Amino acid sequence: MKAIAVIPARLASTRLSRKMLREIAGKPLVGWAYEAIRSSSLVSDVIIATDSREIFEACRSHGWKAQMTSATHRSGTERVHEVSNSIAADVYINVQGDEPLVRAEQIATLLEVMKDPAVEVGTVKTPCRSEDVNNPNAVKVVTIPGGRALYFSRSTIPFDRDGTGPRYFKHLGLYAYRKPALDFFVSQAESALEKIERLEQLRFLENGIPIYVGETSYDSVGVDTEEDLRRVTEILVNR
Image 1: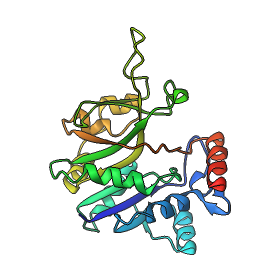
Image 2: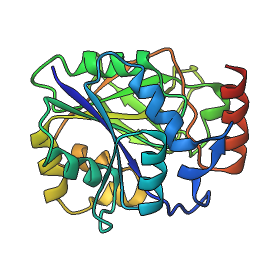
Image 3: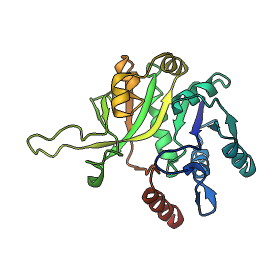
C-alpha cells in the first residue's frame, strides 16, 4: 500500500500569527511535523503543500519537500486533493503542520485502518485527558464497535446525564483518504454541521461516507495559541 503524507501549510492563521514559521529550538513548526512523519517507514513520501512562497522557500532551505498549491483552497483537504491529482498513491495521509508531536506509531495505527480496502476515510482517536473533556479545542469522537465514527464534536460527547463516567475519546488531526473520497469531498459544498462545528470531516458523515477510527495510546498537542506553543516547545526540548 503506497501511502503519501501531505502537510497542508498556510501562513495566515487567525489565532496564532504566522504559526507555521514560528520557531522551536531554531526549527520552524512545520519542519518538526515534516521530520516526525519522515520517521515512519510506512510512508513513501512527505510533501508540504502550501500557498505561501515564504513557507515554500523555508522548506527548500531546510531540504524539506514542498509543493506550491492554489491560494483559493478553503481547507487542508482541498490542498491534499490538489496533490493527489499529480501524484499517484493508494492512500493519502493528511497531517496538520501544527501537529509537531505526531508519531510514527500514530501513522501506523492510521494505516492499519486503511488495510481494509472498503474503508474510504480513516482517522485516529486517543483516550481524552480529563482537562480536555470540556475543552472545545479538543475535538471528541464517538464510535461504534468496529471503529465507525458516529459523530465528531467540539462539545463533550457523549453527554453523561446520569453520571456513569463514560470513556471519552479525543480525535487526533490525522486523516487517510482514498482518491475517490478526496474527489467526492471537493465536489460537495460545505455541509450544515461542518459549518456549525467548523469540522470539515463532518462533510463526509453528512453525505453518507463512513469514517473509520483507529485507537492509539499516544496523544498529541496541536498548536493554536501561544500557550500551546510554549507547551510543545517544552516537550520537544525535553525530548
